[in-house]
Image (tube, helix red, strand yellow):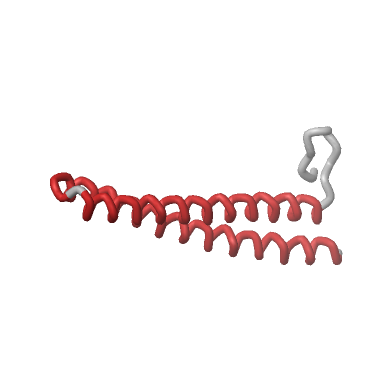
Length: 97
């Protein structure tokens, strides 16, 4: 009744948690990358707003949106970090039994 891998064989309980841990680690890294990219874009738009005063309003709006995306992505990275820790703890407990 366990999970099956792509080869059709059932997975052990600990292996399932290790795969889950790996998935959450991957998602955490992607979220961190998204936060950095959005933060860099926000800084770029802030610079453009100063450099181009005719379109400053547009650049400030884009800057605020990018900053919000960066904050959301950082929050998601924290969420995935906690999920990764939980999966790691569950893998240790499954391995003991």
